[in-house]
Image (cartoon, rainbow, N blue to C red; front, side, top):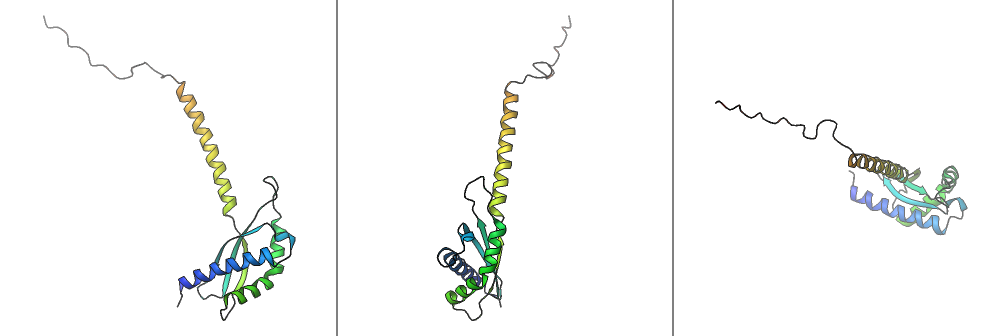
Length: 149
């Protein structure tokens, strides 16, 4: 039977252990700008997927995601050992590292929203100076009845 609360607690603990190990114990310089964003553990607690992001040195510089993925792959054994020692569970889950796409998607959505705001401002500017295409009062006025004299 799956205990979802236990899986959530274990995933949170694994995130903390991996982040701490990357910061203090793993000496690979490619991993200095890695941030652990989330961890998901399967219901049987056998496999853990660790999501990470890589921050660039500057906004314009793209981070070396391939180098980071290779460094994480080479450090998986050490990190799994740390997770096993830090959690104290019978079976240490296998670790899989996945690049988190949420920051890229959030950046793309922000760009789309900025473009939409610019388009709305352009439409509002054009509407402010627009004039009606037809008469000033486009509605029909009822005719006055003729005098029956």
